[in-house]
Length: 106
Image (cartoon, rainbow, N blue to C red; front, side):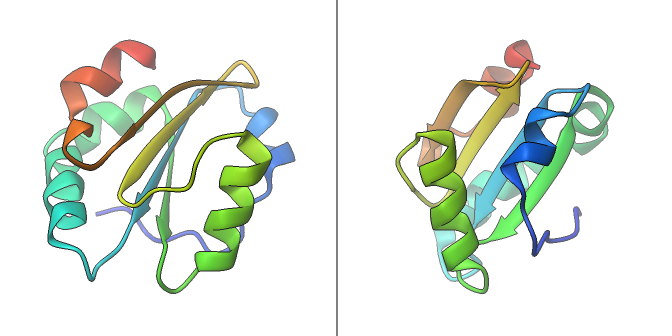
């Protein structure tokens, strides 16, 4: 499983050469656990195609909200956000989080 990221800087995300996959997860939510487990089934392929950032929205709520604001997306949990070429290209939440819908954007 990916490690949680505690400090997120949008300027660093924008400067990435690879696409960035941001995963916002709550370990208090069963839907979030289902979504994360779906992604973990494709962890190797996701890691190959993108830099993955996992955010614990309970422990790191202020950074999660700030990141959503800076990227211009509504905050949701669970949520995935893909940033590619300095632009948000895909956002999904809850049961729409599936590797087969994410991979084409990476």
